[in-house]
Image (cartoon, rainbow, N blue to C red; front, side, top):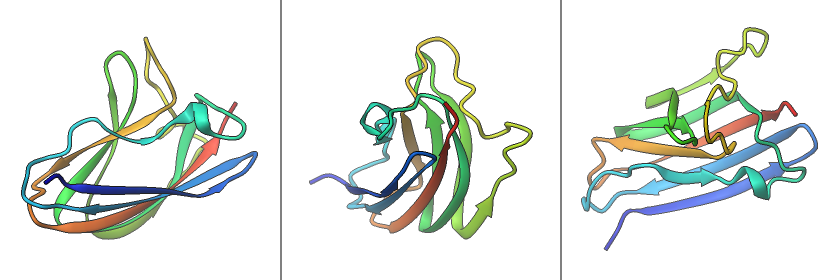
Length: 127
């Protein structure tokens, strides 16, 4: 068997996109560069996203979010249970990937065995 990753887009408007990701680990191993957001499928499509809000509950493992590019760029790590809102003025969580930037979001897990958890991410479409 394999870990079960369920991905649901709960909102996709002209300015914001919200996704909910549920993970059920089966002790088969870590997730690496697992796709959770395909920017070309957004309405409207946008390769220039910024993370505005994150809420998560991860039982015994961590998740690192990355912007997809020729060399993926890590931008946020979640552990335990918490939530975070981000200031967009400084652009700290905007997509700063360089060559090969797609706008897609992927993740890696660390410590995933037979644990489970979820995270919800709100992205701003910046152009």
